[in-house]
Image (cartoon, rainbow, N blue to C red; front, side, top):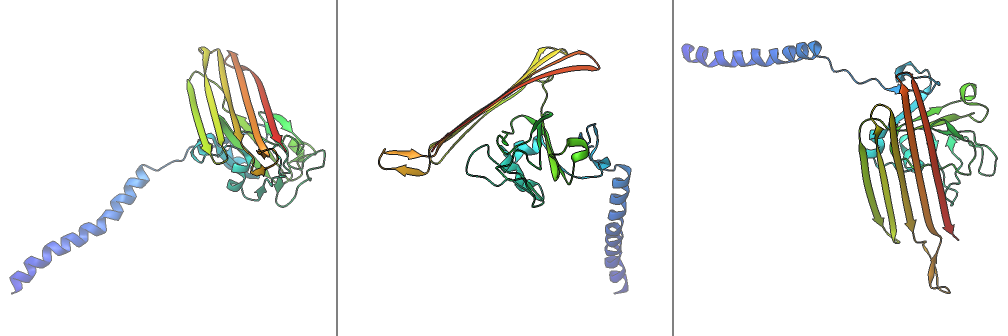
Length: 257
């Protein structure tokens, strides 16, 4: 009986010892090959730096996240940013941005939360709209930013950076269809006209949708909406330290009331 017990306990002991040694080997392996996250570069303080070096409350949403989460407008972006609201006024392009419960009101001539699209400011509720197509990243600063962004940045600032064209050829087409005859087409394309010298990027979309009010007298719908957005970028790099970027954008919103 003693021989049988010794024979049966030996492999059990070896198995226990082997199991206890597994976490040690796994820990040693992870220490020898640590996982390192990629650095996130931002320009919140008017110069490029690592996100961890910015001593401010800052949210950064990359272009990859915008595409994966189907973030097409600023209203789609707001739920992903703490303490940030974009309440609709019932009319496209008329939004009073709210940060930490503070805003400047729709009828005011300036906002307390400016938006900068490739460095160009939007300082009023009229026109506070942007279609997020072919975007590199969006940076949203919370808290007073008047030192760097002027007197209209009492509660924060929004920076939207378009993806600059380069030697890589990119493009895409998106089509959406929904209720009330909603249809949306989105196009983006970029690439090099002259390799390492001249590049072009085009992006835009068009949206149309019938209204939800039935006008029995006219036998038609009211509050129909039509939007057109377009952007073109021409980038020239004559030298390694020289860059010239020309951007043209167009927005048109039409609502039949």
